[in-house]
Length: 389
Ligand SMILES: [Zn+2]
Image (cartoon, rainbow, N blue to C red; front, side, top):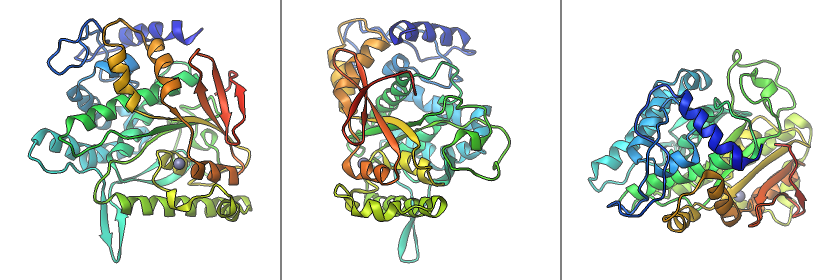
């Protein structure tokens, strides 16, 4: 079934399945008369318990509604609690609740967005450490990454068929909601310039034992019983703050040590190859939207030849789409068709170099303005999209 026909049907099914009916719903762009200038919407119910916020729901979602979705997902969603080993609660209590409390206070203080503390003569992350894909101790040290993790884990419980547009929709939803948070603050938070999603080539992504879900050469023992693990990772440029340079340095060091760990595990020399590649720009490492997704797959080593998929997207196009679609009724597929060709961004040369050195096949999902999709490889070669994920 095509995305065009599938999305409305799935949306309806999701709405019917929802248990409790509260505030957020599906927009219709009828006019632009709301005081905030946002499109006026006609709401249809979707539950806070729904694991995947759809594109249309995200479009009209208020910041309060998104905050409540995050709070519920972190604090009350039993699936997410199990899948995160209870870390979702820590993320809410330590990172997201302070962020939203600060945004609501309007006291002029900068909201807490990056969590680092001094340890001796250097700075270390002070957020929450989680297990995500191959990485057993991924440090979430900024609020965008914390939200990315929660949305990724929760989306893994969405029972719709995984298609490339499923991942694309998740990335758009992430963009829309980060943008709403950023725009709600008084000049202290910037809308991220780039967001990124990366997914694995496995179809059986959820409710499988952990080692079968991942891209490791092998891991001898499952760290926990059967549980849901997302097969994808969202990432974003962290919000700029006084600690941003420190976090960037930390993430750069993590990427380099992940490369060295992969070498030890696979008996390869990827780190040496990486540092000798012409496109290698070590100073760029750690600052990209790709950083956290890459750390998710590289943390435990990555088998050469592994297939990965993904794309980067520029959220500035969300704002332009809001202007473009304000006067008409649109559906999710029309929005995807509009946003994907315009906001697509290739992973940066440094990030491409990392995966090239690891001999990983990273195919970036791209769409032409006529709707035709293609996979763009790291070496610049394009090929038509198939049914692979
Ligand atoms: Zn990059």
